[in-house]
Length: 117
Image (cartoon, rainbow, N blue to C red; front, side, top):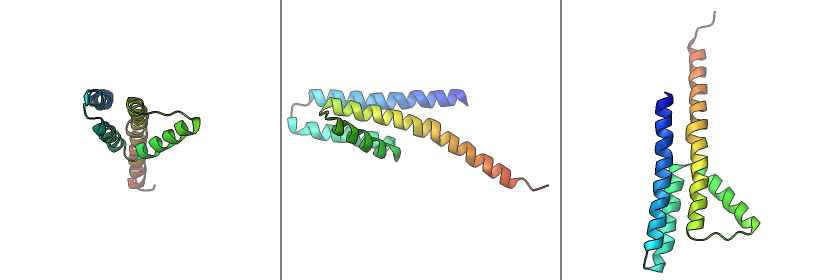
């Protein structure tokens, strides 16, 4: 079970890294400046889909905090912030919260299936 979890964790990190690298390469090699925003939009949507539903909330929260601080992140810096936010939130969601909820649900089902003595 631990080996499977480690494999999924490594796959998770590889997917997040590949999406960021793909975005960075596409963004920096794009000769048409008008398409740079679409590249960032694609990146954001991919990361949010991977971390649905918590990624939406966390990205909005981190974006609000960054704008309140007064940082103006554009381009690859914005994509890096979204990648880091979604990677952390996705890890917490898929590798911490979901297994805990699963164990709790299984325990509750097991205790309700046991007849009272």
